[in-house]
Length: 269
Image 1 (cartoon, rainbow, N blue to C red):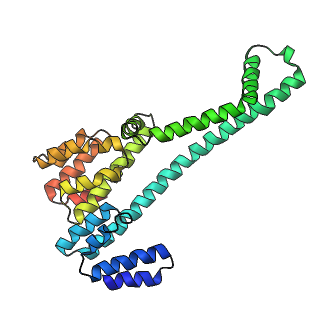
Image 2 (cartoon, rainbow, N blue to C red):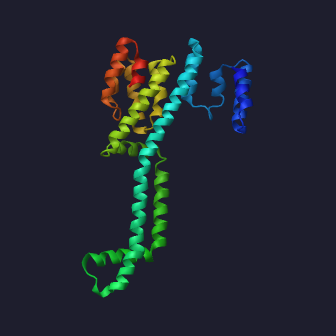
Image 3 (cartoon, helix red, strand yellow):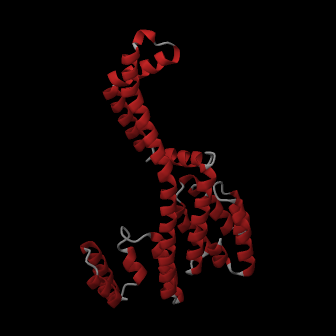
């Protein structure tokens, strides 16, 4: 493994990556386990990968574990790319719509009012004129207000209780909620599958799956799930209590538990 790290160091042109591969190779050459060598650089390597490799060292399946890890992170990257692509179009439409509306209220409406004459305007047109005038005269204050609002949202979202509340609300939004529920279910099933196939126990796999899901509200329910599984309850029976994970996941898990093919059933899901 040390020679492999040194080979990767020699082939890589990125100075930061070269340093990482060199450090890892040095640790291994000193007799440190590969998983522990990665753990010494936990700011670089995710805990999920470290746990997968740690379990494989006990079973002697390091090669298979590395292949599974590569496949797992590649699938996660593809899933995240799909989510970003799906969200990009509505965000683009919203941005364009707001820009057009600002242009209409700032330039178009005042121009027509000047051509027609403000004294001849009535009803709804007067309301639009008042909005247009307010935007033009108070644009700087409105901009500052928007920036303060965005900064406040950015600050609040870092608070665990606020983030958890927002993650819960996200699951309740029509159309969008079911989409994200599917994404979270896929992430959970995929993470559990690769950890279990790498030799990690169900309880430890559940612990390591918490942060991979990407929703703090769902993650907050895992302590109860882990307690139930540890006390002897079947995962298929306990998983249905998790709000945000689709109930249909129960059946492939149940089949996997009964057939001894839990990892493969989760992976196919």
